[in-house]
Image (cartoon, rainbow over all chains, first blue to last red; front, side, top):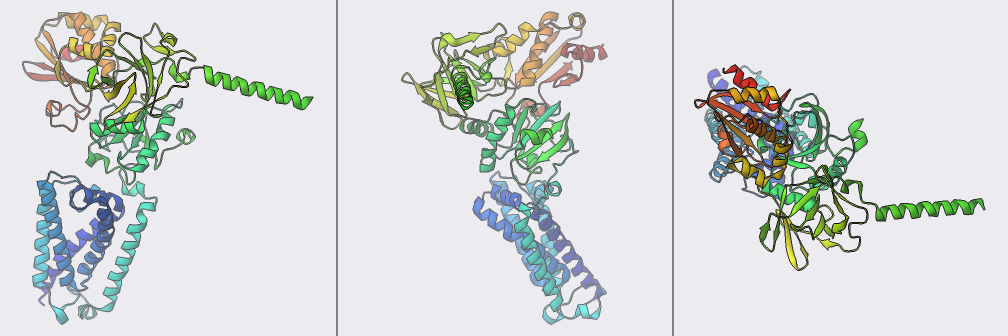
Length: 309
Length: 271
């Protein structure tokens, strides 16, 4: 294989594989959020979305690694290309149905329009195609790394298979464990010291940036948020606790239904879904704000003592 | 002997606590403030004559008073219950708040409250009452319409005493000015500041300053509506225009001073 050709193949594999690895790693920080994003496309239900998210994230990382390492590269690029066709189809279908939330392979870390997602995926698909056409077949296949040592150029060696398999196992384990790991600080934009303006909440009705406020992120159709109402109501009645506002992306009707069903004594403010989903992996998430700056964050409803500690 | 006296003391204490619990009104049933967050629908017809009161920190507890004052009920959304209240045990205070006196709430008659989507219903005296969220005032409205729908805004206008120097400036201002006020009839910050703004302009009585009140929904920042088209990102927003061109904008509570002084400040810069 000519040096230029192997360089092009490696560049294509690095580009596509790299994007899949980065996207997979970011999504593995919040697999449940990715599952919600899939469900928002309304192609498959929430249950199947949860399974798909847990399968797809390790798959993205492992196949991306295989493409870069040159382990069965044509197959790896073929699988990544097929995934991109699937993404383009799903995004286009969801777009045609008006379900444009949760767009893009980076989940909540990069919010884009359906059109930009389709264009990006089409470019990556083209790179896959070029890589597949130019990559050597069968016994000719090597690592494809330009200038690599002869040992790297001798077929799909066992060590690359071991690395890919190890990556798959590690990515699967991390994806399954990540919802239970204390990594919200890294996986979300909400952390002490940031301002409401940084979080895109400065303009929400209710003048949240004035004085002391306790804000609770709630997903109204999930049990943990419903169960949090009792604790938040208790805090709302406790002297010295700042005014409480619930933040949700639910519509006005859904908020009214929630009020009458669960008796939330605090106000519920609407935050656009794209802004809110950057702030939590699991709801409820509660944070205290003073003059627009986040002071503390809790991953559950704190007690009055914890609040003032 | 010593044990007996301890027992007696304990009994007396327990009886005292029981008596207090049975007879005293809950602290939160005092100082109930008028609430305009809900409407009552009786057998499918909205009756705007019913008055409602809630503790300031708990909107899930709502005292309903019929238009004639002959029927009073206490709704608890969180307990899913409605209890009749003795109308003679309801005291209206000079500051507009209401107290339920000790023993005023029926301890024995409890009517179940059933949540049914965006409302909650109960049956009393053979009639079906449905409590619903009060729809917000949307679009352009006159001050009279605002006050009729939300008397709390009217109370704010009535009770406010604007800053004399700012009113004097607004009275003598001679450039034709149009002020659009985007507000939420549901928004507490608007309830605090819009009446002050309206009262100041009413006192100024300057026909060259035209006021347009525009109500917006709770979802104003996400709707494709007029507020979004005009870049309204917080409430209330006062957009000040001269010859159709925006010359200033006030958003939310003023950082310092009064709202009329803030308006005068914007207009002074255009003099």
